[in-house]
Each structure stands twice: as structure tokens, then as C-alpha cells.
Image 1 (cartoon, rainbow, N blue to C red):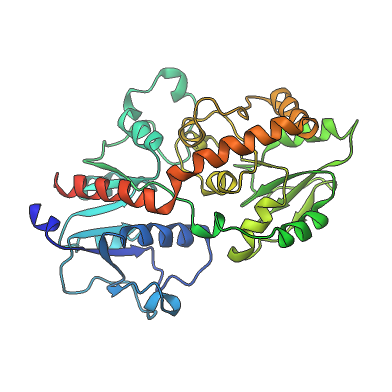
Image 2: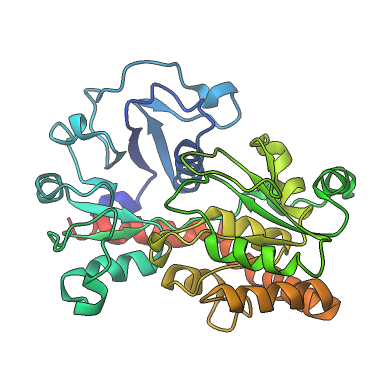
Length: 348
């Protein structure tokens, strides 16, 4: 694969049946950020069209997803199985959903954390205790991928941009002037943060200045009346939204043991404390010494009370997060991604 080092790679990308990249869903936004990082060292084509980052819609004309006649150095397709057999070069796909026939066909799978890579590498050898937990993405045993490539997540520049805080103050006034806790993103039975909600409810018995706000799409759960609910805000507003909270909480979904989380990185970018379970992927992001891991309702309650009542503790968490965030700056993630892609290409 030495020829790839002489010039820029050409990479074909596709996301399901998406004719363009105009949708504001999380999967599209995450893929766009990945394509931007790939563009730091390669010419990236979405559905056969070169991505032009300064043009409206990134220069993509909506059209049916299909492979062009020309060959590419790398094909990265997420959930586009109709394309896989026709690819004329090395093919990477996202590591879920799992399909043994497809995994047998492709050259490698993409994950977003090293915890996920380790999870798949050792999946069939995991302990009997872990096998008791049904994973939503993978069966009891899996076909081991030929190659696992880490497309690490990153913090977008908008989350580190300096601002005067006026917009955050407006959001904060809407959320409540006491100690404001937020949950951002999809809310459904798989990720509903039962333990933290119970902890906040208990704290409110003695201090009703603590509030909880949900912001996102709610499905198949009934939200208690004391919890505030807001619709999802625009991308441009989200840095201000995050900064408006005293504390954020991350969901309890067991896939947090390996899946990446942009929500966690965005909290880190703004220096906002976020309570998380000590899953492997969260430890990868926040480090083993992060003070806001909780295992149960009682630990969550204790941490929330300390954050609420101890200004110095809150400040120390903020400093910890801001010191850690540079690892996830886009420009640093781009360098790691280039190494991962070239390593993959040199193995196929």
C-alpha cells in the first residue's frame, strides 16, 4: 500500500440510503464529523461526490445511493449493505448492526472507542458472568472481524469557541435559577436514567432548588411532572445549552460499556460536570480518576449534593474536564484517524 503515501487517498462514503447529508439526526451529524476528519488527509466523496466543506450542503446534489464506476482507495459504508459486494477496493463498515454474512464479506469494521475494539476482540472469551447480560447489538458469539479500525470521536470547534455567556444565561433562566441538572438526547426505556432521577427526587425532599430538565425526543416513557421537558435545540445553540446547566447526566444504557458518546465530550468541552457510570468507554473518555462515577442511586445522590453545595468541588471538576478536552480536539483526532486508516490499508 506504499502508493497511498505519495498523494491523497480517495475515500468513498455512504450512510444507509441517505441521498445527501442534510438531515440533522445524530447518526448523520456524527458521520459528517468523521468525514471532516478523513478530509484532513484524503479526498472524501459522499455517494460519489467530492465533499466541499465551504459550499451549501457540502456540495452534494441529492441522488440515489450507488457506487460510481471509478475505483477508490477505501470504501467506508455505514448500513449500506446493497453496496458492499460491488466495492472495488478495501471496505470498512460500522461495527453494528451485526450480521455474520456481512462480516465475513467485508475487510474490517469501524468502532468509535478503544473500549469497543477490546470488547469485540475479546467478545467470545468474555466471562460467564458477562454472558448473563443480553447485549442489544451482538448475539452470544460473533464472527471475529478481520480488522477493527478506531474512528475516534472528536469535539467540534463550536464547543470550544469563546462567547460572552449571554445566551447561556437566558437558557439558565428558563431552566431555573437553583442547581440545574440536565439530560440531553434521546429518552426511551433503554437509556432512561432511573437511578439519577430517583436521587434527585430524594434531594428535592429537603432542597427543591435542584431541578432536572430533559431536552430531546421522548419515546415510550412517562416523564414525572416535576421534570421539565424541552424540545431539541439547533446545533448552533447546543454549546450555550450545555453551559447553562450546573451538571449533566449520562444515560444508563449498558452499551455505554463500549460505545462512544459525543454528549460526554461536549460536556467536557464546556467544562460542565457530568455524572456517568464507570463503563469502560466512559473511563476511556474521562480517565480512571474522574470523580463523578456512580454505581447506584445512593452514590449519585451523594455526588449531586456535593456538586450542589461545594463550589470548590465543582470548580475542580471543571478544571479537570477542561485540561482533558484537548485530546479530543478535531485536529488531534485527525492525526490518530490517519494512523488508523493507513494501518488498515497496509493490512489488506
